[in-house]
Length: 225
Image (cartoon, rainbow, N blue to C red):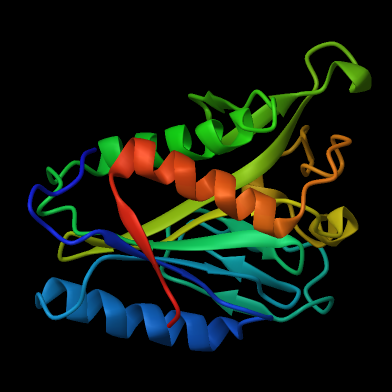
């Protein structure tokens, strides 16, 4: 995955407060269409949502353990059930893969490298697994071979423009994950930067994410909306 030579920097936008999920999806739909038509620049949009669950295209109803706990939204992204809520940085990534090589596998690998690079800023070793989506950290304090998920990935591609994206657990309420089987994966836990003993503010996580994004995908420029 690489930057587009001669193109403007990717727009980098941080949304204040909590963003309604349906509004976010509608916004992405419009922006993806505009990017595809050459009317708008690529965008990375950083938000927080109120507590909710989303169901990807592979979601198994049996993995929705508490269907009445939070609102549940069906979504066109790949993957299974995911939780979003305050303290979790959700990053919606709208990039033009037609100009970046038309390689979805390379794009997903780029997302993983991006998250892993951001975590390294805080001396956290994030790792990918061939049989499990997302980014994982080893938890020797929980026993031999124990691993927890710290970041999720779920994407959709339309006319070679990407949307949806990643979520990084900075300081969410981890008990909220118990209402689902996150991404359909049993036998592993969920963690966050703060759960790992790191007093990281959302603003610090954003700085690390931006620096790592530039390393993987190329230059970006902050906008105010």
